[in-house]
Image (cartoon, rainbow, N blue to C red; front, top):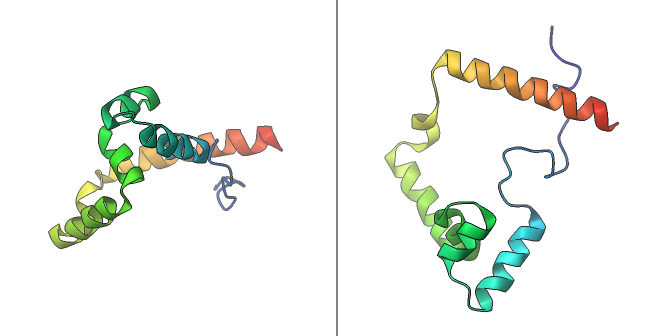
Length: 104
């Protein structure tokens, strides 16, 4: 039986676990980089990899990466096995149910 929260959206980036940088963090990255902070130190400070910082600062690099990935065969190569995917989906549904039922 599906959860009642399956069709509900996690509208806030604070609850969405896929979001690595919140909008306020993205603004701060631009400010700190313009003030002279290096990409490496920004990555350490925000606890993400340098590539994500580069993609945020230089959107053309992200677009080039997406185009190159499409040439190689797209995103399908990153899928996990059927069992792993089912376990991840189950975990996500439980998390979403917990978040949406306790906050409302």
